Image 1 (cartoon, rainbow, N blue to C red):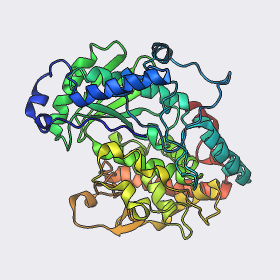
Image 2 (cartoon, rainbow, N blue to C red):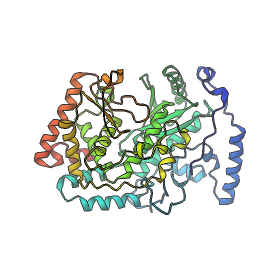
Image 3 (cartoon, one colour):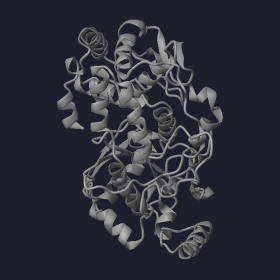
Image 4 (tube, one colour):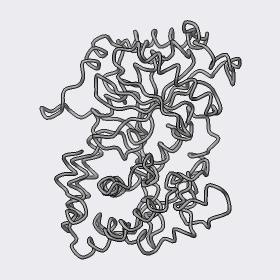
Amino acid sequence: MFSRSPGFPHKQRQNNGLLNQFPGPPIFSQQQLVEVQRNRTNSKRRGDDHSQYELKRQCYSPPGPYIRPAATASRSPLPTRLETARAAGTFPSDVHSRASTPLSSPTPAVPSLGEASQDSDLISLRSAAKDKLSQQILELYVSCEQQDDDLERKELCRAQLQRDIQRLFPYSRIYLAGSSLNGFGSRSSDADLCLVIQEGSVNQKDAVHVLSLVQKFCYTLSYIDRPQLIRAKVPILKFRDKVSGVEFDLNVNNIVGIRNTFLLRTYAYIEKRVRPIVLVIKKWASYYRINDASRGTLSSYTLVLMVLHYLQTLPEPVIPCLQKDYPECFDPSMDIHLVPSEPRNIPPFISKNQFTLGELFLGFLKYYATVFKWDKHVISVRQAKVIPKTNCTDWRKFICVEEPFNGTNTARAVHQKDKFEAIKSQFHASWQVLQLRRDLNSVLPLQRSKQKR
């Protein structure tokens, strides 16, 4: 289902020459040339011509079969880049056209991004949403969730940028990651990209150097606007795609971001209530300005982990602990090119918990307002429990949330006491108001949030 990228040549691993100068023209390995010829031959047999694109495109079709819904008049028009690419035969008729053969039983928990599977979940959620608060949460989710066309636009830019950057780093690949793929994206979500230039890690200095080269190169690309290098702990290059208007963050070899994308994606689809509850909590946190790591508050990734931890630790869990139940699917040492395909056969989780969306939202606020011990505990989705703080530097912060793969603290940005107190007080204030009124508008203006998408 997922084609494997050619390995990085030995001479380019940890090779300073790769980072200190622009490489020459792209040189394809013999293996790549053989694959191109084989793809071209197969394309002629099938009557299509996707071979040029298939060499370079990221094979990130979601687990399970993808069924393309019929086009409707309400669908927004696709950008010219997509129409041109399809007309030229360099882009498949769908981003997810290379899905695997359907499995007979059981049905995988993680579906394609097709509307059919989403409609099935929505029907079930609507039938269970008898109370006003649950109906409001579902209304917000339906209005703001990322659409297939949103993902296609991001994929088009990723694919084009990969083709161009391979002129600098011939063996590199660019992966789409973060909320765009993990199931928790909204229509306004930015896109995260990971540029993989070699096997293994890249230190901060080399990452900055690579991104500075890419930044200079981006000025020659007509579709890239405002490339800006951010020299953070994980350096990123920010830019805007002129065609789609999407904002992108590009990092170098942040492999853990690819791993956690597919862990979170599995959690997102393993139980139908997860995505709506995460979306409303992200909107709530953004409204109260406690969802911005660059300003010393919670990142979206940390918020998602906090929600998953709450759902895991209820007396009747809403979701399981995937890394305990399926360790082979989320092995931290797994070849990065195998990561997307491993979780595809995980079955749905049948929870005995019957809480509505409204009850889960209220319970989430109550848990972090009154139950969770901020000064003593570390949130661990990997173990589905709280673990005690140690004397490690990462755990001396006000809020401690364990990254499921590398064990670092994803909430380390919250390092000022006033920001920490603001976060805690907002949990408490919103919980008190919501438990009395049971109306989403009392803690999050519904119409305003829907307009922001």
